[in-house]
Length: 275
Image (cartoon, rainbow, N blue to C red; front, side, top):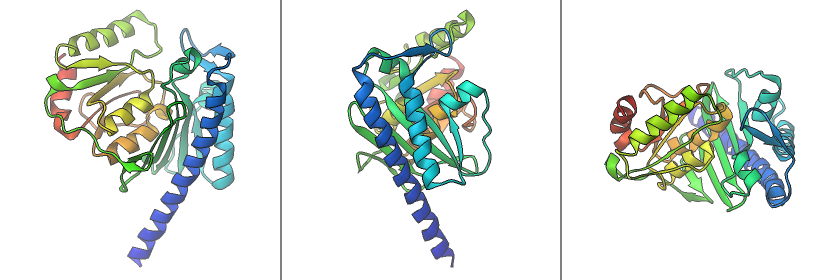
């Protein structure tokens, strides 16, 4: 009986993943079509942007998933940004960023993705991150591995901080104290790592760590769980770790995280604590 239950759960997770992939590809097609066209841009903050394509993609993804799973809960970046509400419960909840990397999208910079994560019991369980511009589809299911375009991926085996490639973000806050903290920390970390990359997408940076392109990722003050819900599953299933920069357990509703392979965690947490 236990075996049958497990098989049934796995079948459900595969069904969830398949629906998320279909939704991501539909949204990705729209992003591709609009990528080289003139965008109609609005401001959510001083530098935080949103386009009509963000909204259209979120509607498209939610419509597809609600048709497949009408009893599930839904959290989307544009919905939450517009209404200021977000409640994460133990119920199966889809957490969606329709375009992670909107500023990149506006500028025609090809690091843009659809990020679709599913939490069950508040635990990230299914993740899909799709960059339609360079046609990279990252997928992961808790306990079942992570894949890039159908091929298994894993984190790097780098064990020296000084030889590691670090990814980070500057965020959308323009408060001087926040900027000084972020840039000051990055500046000090640069003396302890090989180099730095900033691609403008939290979800894609997590996936870059998952497939071994990047060794370390640190971000403070990101937008919300839609930035990390999918990528956290993919990275964890690729053998990596996602955690609070202090080294404590990662909280999906927090707005800061660090990520690495297991060999680098201790040294990275130490460097973040005493940069």
